[in-house]
Image 1 (cartoon, rainbow, N blue to C red):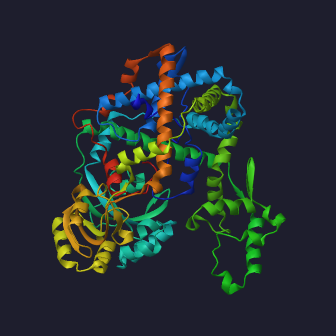
Image 2: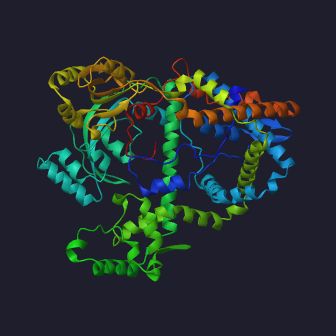
Image 3: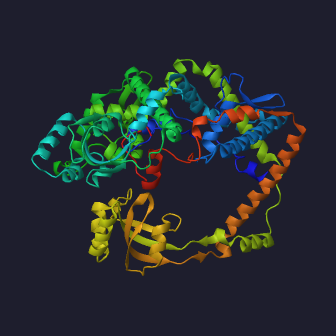
Length: 614
């Protein structure tokens, strides 16, 4: 029963595969917020595949698969482990269906709250149906394509890049580099990718599949030390410098990696499809900038501020307080089916980083960002013009969402036990001391390098914290730490066990290492501060304990209710279907815990790379 309770709360959430990436484009934000919406009610034509039948109500396999994608954010170690999880979630879905049936008996389908919540989420499911129709989640990947991808994983690469907006700017960079201007200096000063610019353009290590296609196709042909000609991706123009090309020691066998490769390729294909659809919609619903409104804004700026001050003001924003009611309502952009006023635009861009905002007199930039910001609204318009509100798929999704809302209300209506008394709180505190213990922490600055001999030389060379900071700012290979000059902050042992254990033996103000860290790299560190383990007093955690006990009692009460209702229900479970729903390529043998290189690299180095395909 306790295993069942681990996953009993099924909540709507965004599925995997949402476009994300190293370049924080308005496009990716629009997609995450609109196209890739909650698909937890993934119920369509199931083709007769039902994992369970509960009093005549069928639970399709798609619903189990959708919940598996959201309730288990981990790699399973074996077929048996995933099968056990699938059975637990199937049991959870059965209980939810029983809650739905009980809710209907109590006429919860007529509740105002159910109607209100359904109406609030209607747009999401409309876009979900549009996404399924236009893009879908299936991908057809041939064995030859998988083998080609596997071959390209032979090496890992380390490169730097400079990103600029136009080809002319990229060609000018080539001229500067040929004139021996240092690559890192140009990247730091000019690259639009400000995250890597802080590290002189360094992107760290990456594998095939982690970069935009034109970028990685250029890299794979280069030799260490070589600088590319301008390379165009949808992010702009890149000048690339390949620093290292090393054997990929994480690459195992095709049999062991086939499933992970297929997953990565499928996600990349879906994101290409999303990008293609985005481009098609941009052509279908072109944004038209009202030039007279732009001219008015620029003249207004000139009238409000003296020239010497105006030159210092960014041209990508405007103080809305300087506009009257009529001026705020002036249309800035229009498209087939909608428009944006000055006031609406200025409100929207407040959530956009200043560096991503176009100048107010940049018509192309305004068109791009307004389309991205209003993409949600445009897709809703497209879905309605296609008549998707009347489609069976939309009606089914809305019906299931209403039922799941009813199930949550039904669950909350089950009688609850009384809150805990003081004796219960004290007893819980005394028997769960580990929950209220703040672990030992050590504040470290670190230089992490791949070569042990280099680490030994650094250990001899570094005499103090400032020297270590300077070296870390240039050399450290731990993702995201170079910009912090090696500052790891207050670390706990569970994060960096080898480094932590070594640091415990070094006094505050001392230098330690080299010690072997994860992924075969070597750490040299400086100990700034140590904090001992601490147990919080009862008053500080009383509210937390009270909530924990209440939730525990609720879970037990609900489990007892579920057990009684299940005993009285007619339930059929298709165990063979549940078992066959697991991809056989996922667990090829003893090394099934192996994951693709991209997953390992991202997890270990916490690096993000210039593509939204991963």
